[in-house]
Length: 235
Image (cartoon, rainbow, N blue to C red; front, side, top):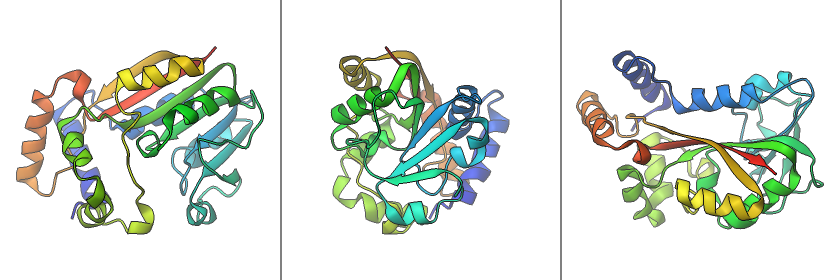
């Protein structure tokens, strides 16, 4: 099993080996934080039990958290947020309600990403930003994972120590740059930036596997790196 604590230990080790490298969650959080002002109205899509907004919500005028899992909302660590149970494909908000929509580890779970992207664009004010962090399905590890869709929940429980209540089906229908662009443009969202970030800790069961993962990351071309951190702008 690879605990979160072990992953963080290896991430710190990798950061020492690769000056300038930062974990994807940190890159994502900094991007989200840079888009918050005292006037910003933000929607945390798939907010779970907290995530980035529990740390930076005080920078915004309004932060709404949405998640389809009621248990996660009840356990949310920032109860000052306005929390709603719902799905990205049917947002219960008016047009142009938000200046920022952010989503970490959400795109891979969308069963109907075209509808979700259209909804994100609808609730964003002109010039509003959609910021996300998601796996890149072109990475070798994700290629294997897609072939194990039926066993994913059991594998996540065994490999990462999460209960099945904390795992959700992953479809990977919005997890390449080409695919995201093809969903974003018809919805009225234009790409601002895409960052490809590596992370060798997914199979870091021990020092040997960590070294193997580091080698894989070194040989993996930049467009195939395991994480995508994207920003799109509403027209």
